[in-house]
Image 1 (spheres, rainbow, N blue to C red):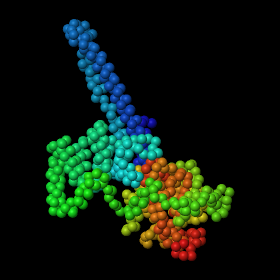
Image 2: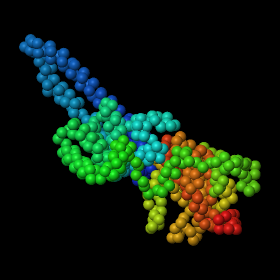
Image 3: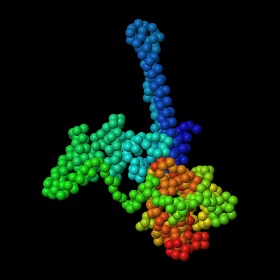
Image 4: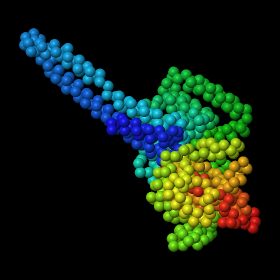
Length: 539
């Protein structure tokens, strides 16, 4: 099969898998882009070889003709006195040079351009690039990484180190600027300027960097630094109209501030102190919609975990046979307490490597952007606070799915008959799921009447994660780190059937690695006698 036919076949498969964009939401699907890019490089190399062959032919002809014309031009009449030379001159000009013209005009780009045009339909979009940039900023915030660390690729657990160029940093800053995020605009434009000042070769103009940076700094009320940066810009380009206009505006504002200081000396002290802090260039990250943001991110970094020695003494390891389940008597599972109240346990060797690979293989073609339910309308929609792709597997899809479902039933002692399908999720760049409840608090949920609420969560970790990606519980300060082949289990509802609001949890952004999980949500119906009600409302 010809290379271009192989490419078209590959792209047909690629199209089936990627009818939607959003590559950045799944590292698993982004791996396909690696192979697509490799195929493009091979196509480019074929074009280069064809071009080199053509140039070699032209060069050989040119060298031969250079020798010939040097000889003939030194004595034209004497050269043409030989009839064979006269004939060959006529032939060359009538036939041979025409053949050379055809070689020169031969277009060797067709194959490469055709491949590139076809593949471009399935390239990441502007939305992907924006999402990827925001993912880096999310990692920067969550794990308290400065722009220099990210730009130089100094991340823990990385096998392949990579760097951000001035152009990359400038692109990051522009993404933030276009989103009205001046905090990250300053961070990344400053990094772009720093690398530019260090002499890094780039096509990005220092004037453009200063233009964005000065305005972003102004948005923080730092007039002095905004003026300083604007003056530097004008020194590089005195014809820059916007910079000149901005400078005059900044000067007017500064003059008004001075007049105000003269009228009120008490305010003067306050303003002077404020300026000293602002002019340091350390701007505060704006508050956002998440009330427990600081606690959540601290737990993601492994800080603030409330595992006291007293609590540690209440945690044990044991063999678990599922209340003497016949299937587990001979081969019980290793069970480890992760937290005492609410009780969270981890099971070891729940899934084998072969089972994990099979489930990933089944899930990957079906992965779609994970959704959340709008609290007002109840409609499923995508959200920036959940960055992953997921798919749902039925028992009929493969015997492995049925086997894993049965195993979860044996371990928990709960029935899978009313449980949801096995959900498989793969997290993308900075993949996360911010604090949320697994149980429903919406009376309009249709499943509440038929199947009851989500009683419990069984979460399988199907990969190790080099850095980040913990499951954290901000309410009581727990952090559980992924370990391939293990699973964690907790009840979302109290025995009374009321939601246990302590179980609000989050999946931390993946800093380095590729995180795969699968989970099973057990519902109340069918488990009334398997997990009986408690004596009180808070049991």
